[in-house]
Length: 82
Image (tube, rainbow, N blue to C red):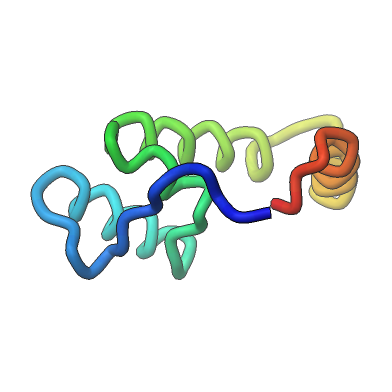
């Protein structure tokens, strides 16, 4: 299934979007499409990244593997390839 959201390329980004893409790339190595979907609101993109990092990497009763498993199951149930 193709994306229904226009996902702006990092190369053409300017201003706040370029800064957000740079921060995401510095943190993750690349900008995933799930984050590019927030391109019209760069502050939402960064908030999404912060939430993801908190959920997946902060101290928790769940191991990293358990968190990844839960995320995979939820994505599968929702029919999401991501």
